[in-house]
Image (tube, rainbow, N blue to C red; front, side, top):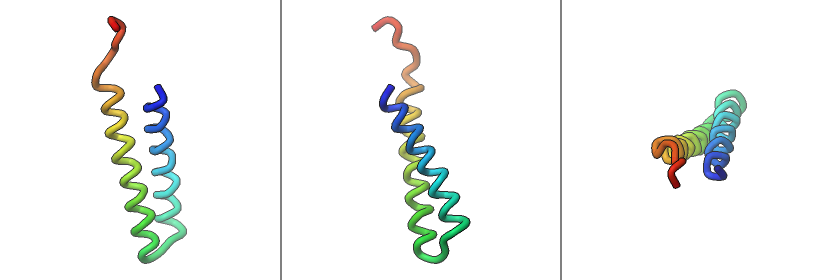
Length: 60
């Protein structure tokens, strides 16, 4: 459960930093912030796959 919350938080951080990077920043800082945003989104996607793909574990 906590792992999925971390994934959701990373998605939120990714969206906020992408908006900030595209609207307010220029040059190298824009690239740096957008790279951080993409990295957060990639990690959140891997976490969500890790949480969702195993399916239900009612038998445990």
